Image (cartoon, rainbow, N blue to C red):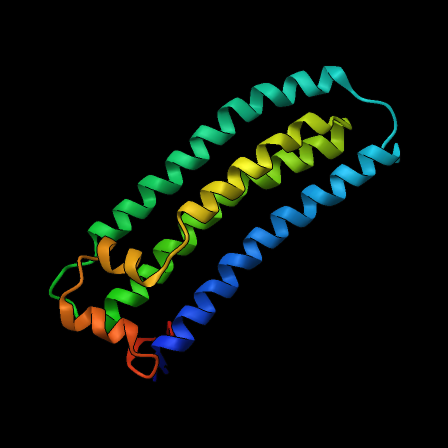
Length: 168
């Protein structure tokens, strides 16, 4: 039997996962930066850096587009007549997929920086972090994206209201 999840717990869990993804990406970028600055990775590999630049020019737009499109497909699959519990459970999955696809470029450029010892790759990480902040799932954003009714919006605002259930 699925466990019922209150609004307060739902948003706490959603934010923990979201900020863990931001934290992982930021931590890897910071570690890469310090290793490069200390010279621990050896000399720069400019030939490999050019190859990574080409790959990154493909990976970033593809990842961002895939995350956006998959998120929209998941949202379209959420029928307005479904109970709020089912809408929120599906939204959680959709948001997790979108944020994973947002995280991919940030992790990839950090790895490219580590492999090539080129700090320039890390310039992309703050841009990805800004996208994470822009797409942060708040109560008002979720209500708008799911086109929730006034009663459903009120449940989101009530910390004790049951708004979702655990995934079986």
